[in-house]
Image (cartoon, rainbow, N blue to C red; front, side, top):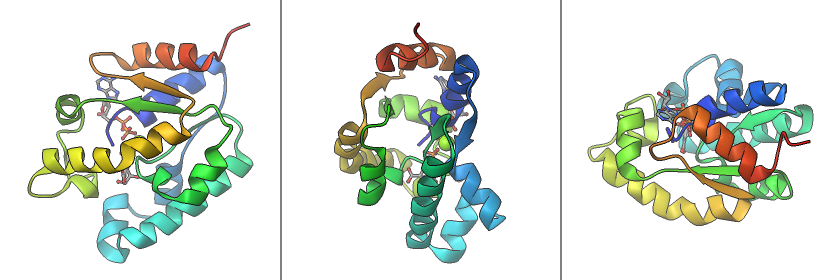
Length: 161
Ligand SMILES: Nc1ncnc2c1ncn2[C@@H]1O[C@H](COP(=O)(O)OP(=O)(O)O)[C@@H](O)[C@H]1O
Ligand SMILES: O=C(O)C1=C[C@@H](OP(=O)(O)O)[C@@H](O)[C@H](O)C1
Ligand SMILES: [Mg+2]
């Protein structure tokens, strides 16, 4: 959440001359409302169902760069679909997360009394799932989006002759 998946995903697509897609954007377009409103009106479980379907559809239809939401890997069937694909896990420390997002209300899972603690807890629950599906782990702390994109291309050995 807020690590730069969407920002860096777009840069990667430009560099690779590939198309870009973001499952959160697909969900927003299909639902006709923001993710925070889906959480509010229908709840997280419903959002996760939309997300599972959005990832499945994107992986079937799209051949370029795909950014996922930070919780997509909570679903076992999604993790299975990602197996064998060149997946990068972008990581950061909590201090960087605060700088990036301001831990604001656009991300409903962080719209809580203590967002720093919530962010740390979510990461503790999820980190092993990110590393399970990732072919490469790229630390983003103190790096610009361009530097992160370079590091991803390098780590995944993409865009090389
Ligand atoms: N490497 C970076 N350094 C500083 N800010 C960044 C970096 N990558 C993204 N950001 C900023 O952090 C915020 C979250 O980025 P975003 O791409 O939406 O992350 P995600 O898709 O992982 O939630 C945006 O305001 C974006 O401009
Ligand atoms: O980590 C999560 O559970 C979520 C991350 C968000 O996407 P980003 O990781 O792109 O912010 C978005 O899918 C939703 O708010 C839930
Ligand atoms: Mg995003």
